[in-house]
Each structure stands twice: as structure tokens, then as C-alpha cells.
Length: 335
Image (cartoon, rainbow, N blue to C red; front, top):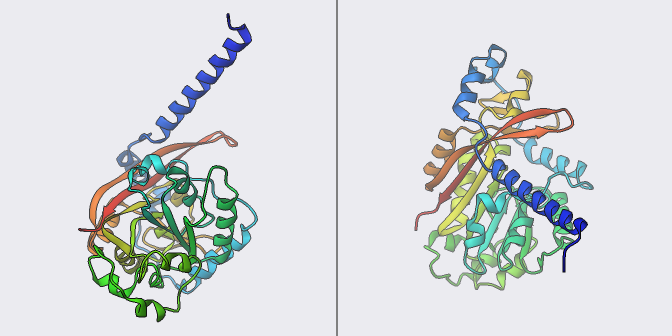
């Protein structure tokens, strides 16, 4: 049977479309430009020197941070503000290659844009997701429960927590398990009963072990640490180390130094070295590799990968190319 010209045209079109998609993905995950060349360009631009000067004295209140993010999520509650992070499993294939029933803690989950691809990628993975905003968690539950091809029942456990201000709840990692190697869980039911911070997902988690979940195999920290005040970053990272099982891995991605969004901030929104506050009160920090390395190594992590991700992102509406800089990192808890 001879295929019709229209059928051949359709096949060729689909093949061409597939190739374009593969090429687009390959380009997205490559280095579109050298960070050192960007650094040289920025540091030689007199109009941008205010980003490099000594930070001004700031009266910005730390207590406003959590409130600002809650207000942010309240305003964007009805809309899908973030897109699903489809690149996640390409950048962090460990989330696909992990053992069955591996446990992941997504910190600062927002509306679930990071959680969703993890749940899609491996149907045995259990995801615990926290955020300081109840509105964000409600929205995440709605999106994940209605997503195609995702069976999230008993695999998605959201709970309220600001990891920059509080420890993770004892049902996730109890005080006794924090002090042990976690190779074998110990019976510490009393420790759990004394915990008053149990939240959504706790009852399910407690059924899995006598004392607590026993920590997680992975922590994902995706565009979250930059929202934490710089002085609170060390204890927040230490808390990430505590909740990981020995040999567990923290997967990190966040804003890099000289990212386009950093250069857009005016001088009056600068509240510290590489630290800025938006008009809505939320803050953003822009990391260099040295700062990230110092923070995680000082907390006790082992560096596995650390590099800049430099991407030319096209703004089709305005016909402009935007140079985005992110820091990509993987850090392991010692065994």
C-alpha cells in the first residue's frame, strides 16, 4: 500500500517538529555564553557599579519576609504563576535513578512547579513539600490532584514550615534520629508525641515508622534559598543537612551573580551585598559559586557539582534576548 502525499507530509512534519524539540532542549541545557565574559562586561559598565559597591545600611525588617511571601501567594493564588519545571529531571537525573520508595523533601514548594515533575518522573517516589504559605500549599494540592498522569495519593505530603525560622517537624525527623546515623530507625514515640508542629501529611508519615519518617534521601532547594535573609542562610542549610539521611543528596538551583534580574534592580532596592528587595517586600539574593561553596561546605556537606548555568532566554513579545544566570549544585551528606 502506497502512502498518500498528505500522509507523508504529516510524517515529515511530525519528525521535523520532534527534531526541533530535541534541538531546543539540547540548546536550553547547554552553556549559551561564558560567565567570565559577562562578569567582565558588567564590571566595566560604570552605570552598573552600584551593584558592586559596599552595601548600604538597611533597616529592612527580617520579620516581614514570611509575611511578604504569604501575601505574594495570596495575590497569585488563583493563577498558575509558575510553570512546571520540566528541566528538573534532566538537570537532576538522580531523581529518576533513585531506589524505589525514595523520599524527597521539596523546600519552598510554592504551587508545586517542582513537585509535579518529580511525581511524574517516578511513580514510587514520596514527596514531602513545605512552604510558609498555606495558600501556596492549597494551590499545589489542587494542581497535583488534577494533573494528568500523576497518581499522588499517599505520595504527596504537604506541610507548613518556614525552614529559615523553624526546624522541620519531628514526624519528619525526630530529635533522636537527628543524633543517630539513621541506618536503623529507633523507637522514639515519646519524642513524636511531644511534638506540637505536626501538620498536613503527618498522620501518613507516622505510619511508615515507629518514630518518624527517618529523614529523606533527597532535598530539593530550587529558587528558595535566595528568598532567605543572608544571615539566616547558614542555620537554614544546617537544617537541610539534618533532615537528610547519610549519603543523601541536596539538589540546588538558584539565581546567579549578574543574572538579568539582578541588573534590573535600582540602587534604592539594594539592601545588602548581592541582596535586593522587590516592591512587594519579597527579597532576592544572587549567588556566586564561592558563596554557595562556603555555605554548604561549612554546614558539613560534600560538594559533588557546582557551576553556573548561563542561558540566553528569548523574550518573543519584545524581541529581546535575556541573559539568565543560575547556580547549579549538588551536595551530599557524609555517610
